[in-house]
Length: 122
Image 1 (cartoon, rainbow, N blue to C red):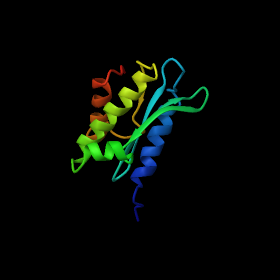
Image 2: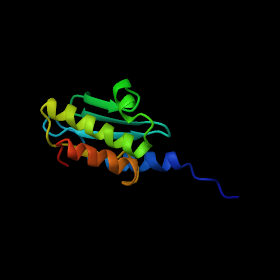
Image 3: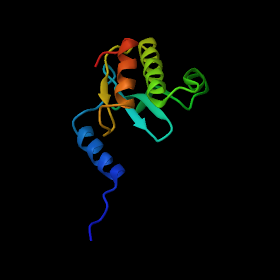
């Protein structure tokens, strides 16, 4: 019989393949996205030091309250704007976008457009 493929394992393999080629530096950190069924998380990472420079997610009370009863795509856009504002405030204008093995559509694309609206370049 055929074994059913685990979609998360396939996503992790895609993410590992991409991570071989990209990494965050102090000048250009990595904007990493993680998407669960209910929430979305974004963080700026300097891979040379292994440090998270800024983070935002729908779990935070301020962002969760701003999203309110909105759908998940608009909540992702709010998270993107928040991470963009925090990155610019920390002095990071340019980043490397790491979609985490997810397809660049839906919530991931909305997060990216929100970050671009806040002033990030990638």
